[in-house]
Image 1: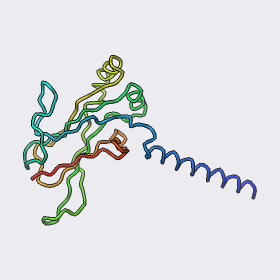
Image 2: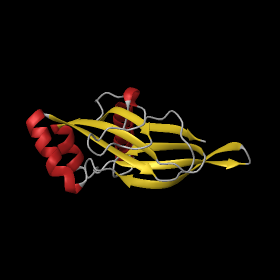
Image 3: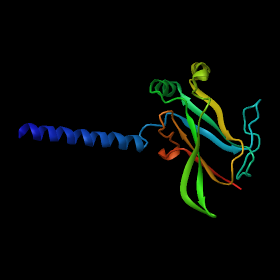
Image 4: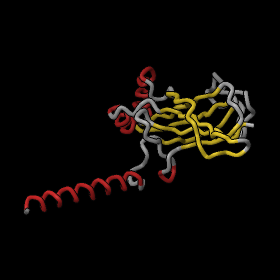
Length: 179
């Protein structure tokens, strides 16, 4: 009976400590590993400057749509992300489903695109920038060539599908209406 009570106490302590650790992670006690310094909807990216060419507030159907962003992270964050297998960062594209003219609130993922920042091919360049500056500041993007009309959104996630957190500890998600 004593052993059962001790075991129950240990299990209760583990549950409480696990819940506290999860609460600490979601409460934003530690700064996010990656900072989305800027995010912009555009119709294209200038290949020379790697900047968004034409910014959009809403988009036209069947025309190119790009979510461009500037991502920053420290040397320690890059090492932690790499060791944990959380690279590359991905854009998960979603489109709301519609019934007639009303949005149903359902979304369907259309793509999960690995971004160049954090890809195996570019990790050496990221490490070089980190060693020179103490952090990296990387411009990256993903695109849809001919999106249909509706409400589109992009969730920014790590390779393990956990969300990249933005200000306030909320998952980074960007939306736009395509008309």
